[in-house]
Length: 386
Image (cartoon, rainbow, N blue to C red):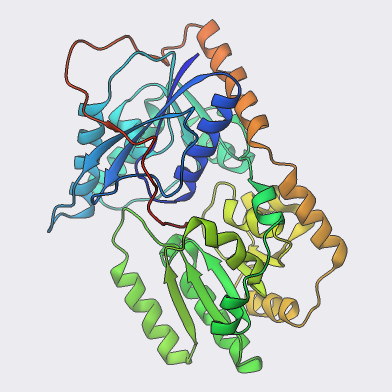
């Protein structure tokens, strides 16, 4: 089967991580897989090496100063639309941008956004209503899709590269530099609940002043400088000690996670929670926001918090060693139960059903024209982290 997966970036955001892992699992299953992406800001490769069995087509997407987020999104859609070519049995968009660039095929809805800007809201709406078929990584998000639009999605949970984190050895250099630390992965942005985490750390550090907050990741399409300034002001007001690591080399990420005293995941909206699942694989105590989707995914393997105060209470308990060994074992087993090969098999079953039903999820060969995306399958990756 000729399958094209589309994503919007080479950066290590959750949807991009999902796209690459799924592509490689589909290739292991004997499929002919191509990943299309936008290579933003001069990127030459994805944040990690991609299995050479997967063809990667990267469309150059240089930065343009002075553009609004809406303009950048529309330019992204146009660039990917103009470049995309080829004959595929299945075309599967993994985000709003790629679903607008090549509309009407298969779309994974990882989570639902709520935009106030008219052009972004319109792009979000089209990326939901136009596809012929939908996939969600959790039943909770599938329920939101049905309640809001009457669309029925196939639920296929994420896989997890659990072994990479389960075998990680704590890197002493992190502890030597920062001491005991609470780790959050995903950067500073409203959806990640950063300001609530900073407020919780104000309570934590009043009791345990030696514990620092580290925030890793943060590459995103959107401009969150105003939110970052608000977070910085709140941290200064509360006297919270925290360090923004930014992108972390992919090879260094498991050791960083394994070195954390506790892992915080206070997101206000998620589809699955891959970073928290990786922390469970590394056998770290994890606390997440009390959301239906995270209740569904994590069950009794994590602590839940509904406010900065309850987040602080849970973190203090974990930092004090009040970790149930059985919960840690359940978390490790849960992470290991999520296989990318199983996810690929479920996708293939869906693709075959759609093709048998005659759903318009593929494409015919395009006419003659120059190839726009350059192959980067043999290029060394730049260092990134989600």
